[in-house]
Image 1 (cartoon, rainbow, N blue to C red):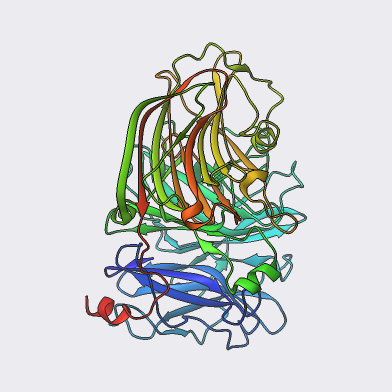
Image 2: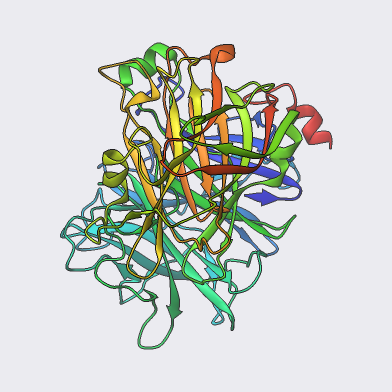
Length: 527
């Protein structure tokens, strides 16, 4: 959250081991979302209503009262109940100490819901009737759902008579909905809206973290207040949360995301957990597990069908050692172009590719509905007509290892289809115990000008990629054995039969920010 000039990041943390276990709410603070400093743990499991764990939730800023934490606790009977904590001292700009309310739990598990299927309250929004609302993730009969609760004072809550939103009854493949998120977006422009905003020229985004697939799905739709109170997605055919066809915030390793309103710059910020590709034993040996994604700004695309995402502008303060090129052809005789002069293991790259001719695009088979499966079959090393082309990140000198981020262009009956892929088995020479999947997404982009853009943020074991200005995003985790530190390389490539040009490329070494430190807290408080 953003409060009184400080960004606060609360996250699930086990202080005793690099695996799931004794979960607390850890707390870090920042002035710019780039340099972060630890403060004391905000919430420990200390009371009957959270003794089995202080699990996920959200913050809401109450006008005239300040922020509150709304979180799920595991009680003495292993039931998931909802609790509230508030700052002990609102005059402390870092809000280091928090106190749990005597009224906890403020919401108990409803009748008909299994005690372990009721968690992760959303940020609250205030209705025109003066009642606060939150939604909480749940599941019933293998169908994920979001339950709506209302309160006049944010303490006494009543469940809505109708389900706010649920998975389609036709899709039993959806499981528990976690970390639900719900917020309005403007139909025009990138400016964010307060969670309580209502009126014309507004759409709503409903996001769910699906426990069965470990994916963050979302839809764009309407918030309706007639004949009940519920959310309905736009223009859906079949199940809008199908693992094969659903919109995702990110098509790679990206889960349990949350957004918040950044009032300082009038933007909505998205964070997510990027978990590990290897085992708990590996994590314990490393003594850490899991990272946070780069914070992203998000807004509604002009087509009103999907979100666009882009790394926050503050990341540019880490850029150094810029290199660039223009109008570099990538041909069958010269398919590689090495980007030199930067630290390839810790870099930011923006590139626009130009496709001189679309005539020889491969024919698209309408049965290809699963982009991830298609990327597994037609990966970065499989020659096509137009593509694969893109970037080989975290690459070894002789390309024994690389994490590819690439596009392929197909010709359908009445349009061109663009596939974006990343990951794959070449990302590391490590064998058993390291997951190396191929990730994929279809990119809704018009190739009328023959150009498509790609941005990649590389940080040793993670590559976050933004295709076509943020229309499709893929995060990949890997642990290379050769492409490590100064031995990592970066290449632009084209393994298609048709020439592709690098219209423009800029790349930077990224400096290391201040992270996970405590020595800056005093200065931050003074500022």
